[in-house]
Image (cartoon, rainbow, N blue to C red):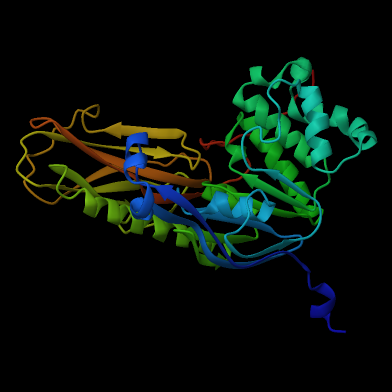
Length: 401
């Protein structure tokens, strides 16, 4: 027997030609539905393909990130894998115990206490009463719910909901863990605890399928990235290449949106570019280096006074830096056509990771505004000895009393 055969991992998830469509009605009122009954009814219904002919295999012990723009089919695909919804066509095969965190508080009854919901949810996930009793204290400690464990969950905040749901799921010894964006809920300390538990699961050889808008999260946790667009798989492979493929998908969607808005806004942001210290286009910047954000703007007609601004966000939507020409005290020359504005940052002091850059142009003499969200994706390289969105050099000095 060869080494390849002895080290081969079995498939734990198999999807073959999986399609899921939903029937969407075009008649929005009761009157419309009555009028369109009968032979004309079909003309007012449309099939929306959330997942379109997806064939995918996932090996045991791998961590896979599902990525894509909003509406690309990520969450529906995860629900198909979890058996929450059935495919319209094709087959889904899984093996082993599965724990799914697909929706906030899914599986919780609002009128039951946290304690009662732990027993209910864990039993649904396949644990016996004795196993739940044995793990109950660990579940509560992990969730950080404390005395609220005997309070009805309908009084919980969204963060408390997801912390308890995550704590139950990770203590059921799942072979497959499905996670859909719930790591975006809760404070940074709890998010880090979740990431550490997922990392432990990876080391234990469990299979994790993660839906995330955070390229940084996927790069940190996943062995493989799958990018979806309009329900179809457009990339499947290395996580860094997957992030690049996602950027291309987002760029294509932004181009389509810009084309649709062509005649709407008298002033328009056309493009955002990142330039390095030499003025060359760059997707990566080292911590502490200078950086220029180039915003390309066009005006459909001459405009005497106008302004440009930018903001930089984490993949989870937290703004880390923003400015504009107004608060900088800069008055731009009148615009009458395509123009570029360079906004330079002397030193980039962001923590290592990935950030989205947004830009906005606004008319002052002729009130109008147009923005481009997530127009560029910036990767910051740097020291990983600290965490967070701000970089700093930290030293330790020990002194005896």
